[in-house]
Amino acid sequence: MSRREFDVVVLGGGSGGYAAAIRASELGKKVAVIEKDKVGGTCLHRGCVPTKALLHTAEIADHVREAAAVGVEASLTGFDPARMTAYREGIVAKKYRGLQSLLSSRGITVVAGEGRVTGDRTVVVGDDEYAGADVVLATGSQTRSLPGIEIGGRVLTSETALTLETIPNTVVVLGGGVIGVEFASAWRSLGTDVLIVEALDRLLPAEDAASSKALERAYRKRGIRTALSTRCEGVEQREGTVAVSLSDGQVVEADYVLVAVGRGPVTEGLGLEEAGVRLDRGFVVVDGDLQTSVPHVWAVGDIVPGLQLAHRSFQQGIFVAERIAGLAPVAVPESTIPRVAYSHPEVASVGLTEAQARETHGDRVATYEFNLAGNAKSEILGTAGFAKVVRVVDGPVIGVHLVGDRVGELITEGQLAIGWEAHPEDIAPFVHAHPTQSEALGEAFLALAGKPLHTI
Image (tube, rainbow, N blue to C red; front, side, top):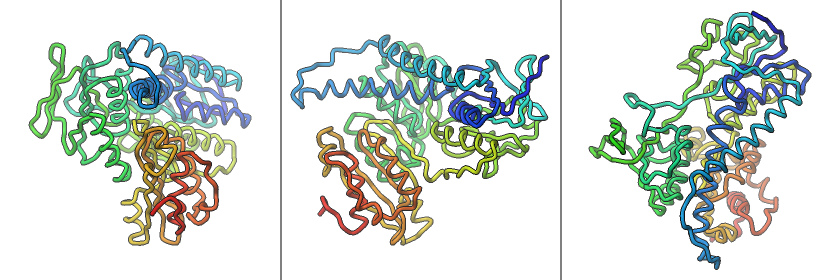
C-alpha cells in the first residue's frame, strides 16, 4: 500500500469538488481529487448540461412549428434521435475535455477510483492512501425513488431518460418539481403525450404560488396534463407498457414512467460515520463554515442540507478552499442563491416567496407583478409570464420571481438586489435597455418605488 500526502484531498469531482480543488490550487495548495466516475459529476455528464441540450432541441422544434406566424416558411417533418443524442454528447464531451485540461493545468492530481474515508483525514482508494491536511467531501447526490417502485426497464430516472433511443409516445412523470417539469416540457415539444403526477397541490411547490399557477396555465395550453394532490400507489411493468395506479383510482398506461421525486445524498458506505463525521438522514452535518464534526474535514454540495444546485456547489467549494487557505470569505446565504426551472416557459426566482415573506414580516410586505404582455421584447418572442418583486414596506427587496421564456438570464439582477439589500427606490434610477425583457423587472421596481411607467 502506498501513501501520498497532500494539502487538500477532495472526495468527489463534481461541481463542488472540482471548484474546491481549482480554488485551493490557485491559493498554492497541493491538491488531489478522487472521483469514481468522471470529473464533472452528474451535472456535466447526466444532469444540468445534457438536459438543457435536450431542452434546446425541444425549443428549436417549437420554433419550427411557429415559424409561419412570423413569415418563415418551414415545416417540422420529424426527429432523428441518434443525431439528438450525438448533439448532446458532443457538448458534454467538449466540456469534459475542457475541465480535464483545466485541472491538469493547475497541477491537480486526479485519482480514478472509489474512495473511503478513514481516520486521520485519509481517503483510501484500492490499496493506496491519500492523506490531506484538509479533506473536502463532495460526493453529490443520486436519484430517489418511491417505496415499492423498482427502477429499470420502462421505469426511468432523469439519467436513464437521456439514454432512450426513441421518443416516447406517452410518459407519466412522477413529481412536479424542477426535474419533472423540465422533462415534461422537453418531451411535449417532441410530440409526447405527458401526464405529471404531483402529490402536493401545485407544480413547483417550492416556488411562489403565482409562479406555479402561471406554469400550470402554460402547461394546460400546451396540452401537458397534470394530476395534482395525487399520489402514485404502484407501478406495474407490462409487455410494451407500464401501468401507474393513482390515489384517485385511475390506472394510467404509458410507454414509460419517469421517477422525478428528488435526489438524496451519496454518503452511505464511505466510512464517514466510522471516521467521526456526523450525519443526519444521510446528509452531512456542518457548521457555518461548512466544516463537519471532524476538524479539517469539510463538506460541500448536495450532501449538505439545502438547495441541490450546481451553482450552490461551486460557491461552497470556493468558500471552503478559501477557508482552508486562511482567508475570510463571505458565506452566501441560501436566500440569495438563484433557482431556475428551464421549462417552456422558464420559472426563475431568488429570495423569499410572498407566503414566506408574510410569515416573517406579516403585513409589512408589498408586492408588484408586471405582466409580460406589457413588455415589447416578450411580445416579439411570443412568451407570456410576469416579473414579480416582493419587498418589505419601506425596506429592501426580499424576493424576485419571474415566469417566461429566457427569464433565467434575468435572475442575477434579482440576486444583486437581494444580496445588497437594495430598496426599489435605489434600483429605480437604473436604466434597462429597450426593448429587452429586463425592462419587465425594471417596471416592477419602478412600481414598488411609487413611480410606475407602463402600468395603469
